[in-house]
Amino acid sequence: MQQSAKFSRLRAATAMFNQSLFISHKNFYFALMETLIFLSAMVLLNVVFGDGNRFITMGLHPFWIIVLLVTLQYGPKEALVAALLSSFFLLVGNLPEQNLTETMYGYLLRVTFLPFLWIVTALVLGGLRSRQMVEKQHLMERLSNSEEANNATVKAYNSLKQAKERLELRLAEEKRSVLTVYNIAKSLEILDPADALTEVSKLVKAAFNARQFSLYRCDGEGLRLEVAQGWETPNAYVSQFNPASALARNILEKKCVLSIINEEDELLLDGQGILAGPIFDVKTGKIFGMLKIEDIAFMDMGIRTHETFRIVCEWIGHVYANVERYQSMHNRSIQIQPSRNQEVKLMPAGDMPPYPILVPVSIAV
Image (cartoon, rainbow, N blue to C red):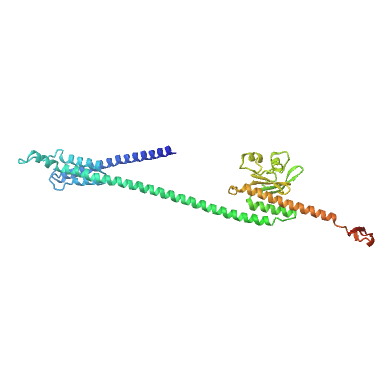
C-alpha cells in the first residue's frame, strides 16, 4: 500500500514537472516572438520616419518597453533574452563614433551602459517575478488541494447523510414491521383452522414483506403444499416433498432452518426458495409442516432475518398446536356428552353407594 502511494505521488510529480516544462518552453517561444516583432517594428519605424540611428541618442530608449514587459510577464530567462536581443538590435551596425577627447574605457562605458542596464533589470526584476510565480504556483496547488479536500469532505458528508437516511428509514420500517408482527402474534390465539391460516399468512407478510411464500403440511407422504402466496403459476415450485428428499429430511428430522446465505443450505434448497424452516410445537416437538419463502426483497434480507424466521416458525407451530388441542378437546366433549334419548336417574336410597352415581336410562319413544 505504501509503495503504491509513493508510486502515485511520484507519477503525479512527474506529470506536474512535464506540464511545467511544456509551459516553460511555450512561454519562451511566445516571449521570443513578441520581442522580435516589437524590435523589428521599432527599427522599421525609425528607419522610415526617423534618422535611422535606432533611437540611440534618446534619453529614455523605446526598447525599455519590451524589456520590462517580458520581464514582468514571463521571468528572468525570457527577460535576459529580450535584453540581449534589444542590445543586438541597438548596436549591431549602429555603433556610435568615439569622441576625440573620450578614452577607450569611457567609450565602452557609453556604448554598453544601456545594454548593461537592460541585462541587470532583466536579472533583478526577472528573479523577483520568478519568485512571485513560484509562490503563486504553490498557492494555486494549495488551493487546488483544498478544493479537492473540500469536495471529498462534501461527498463523504453526502454519502454519510444518505446512509444515515437509509438507516433511519430501515429502522423505521423494521420498527413498524416488529410492531405489526407483535400485534398479529398477540392475536394468534385462534382456534379455527381457516382463520389460523389467514392470520399466519398475515404474520409472514408483516414479518418479512415476502413477495412469495408457502406453507406445507406434514402428512404420511412427506410435506404437502397447503397455502401458496404470490406464486406466478401453480407449478412454479414443488408442491410436495417426499420424506426421502434432502430438504424434507433436514426439516422433519433435524428441524433445521435453511437459508440461501449458507452454501450447504443453498444446495439443499435447490432453487426452491430462499428460507425454509420447520413448523413444530416447541413443548411437544411435534412437527406440523414447513414454512418456505421463495422471494423476498434484498433489503429485507438482513442480519436478524434468520433468527426472526425461526421465531415465526415457532409461533406458527404454537398456533397449529392450539388448533389441534382445541379440536381434540372439542371432539372428546362431543363423545362424552349424553344423547337426547337418555336421561339421568338416581338409584333408590337403600341401594346408593357411599357416593352418588349417574346411571343413563333409555327412554322409550
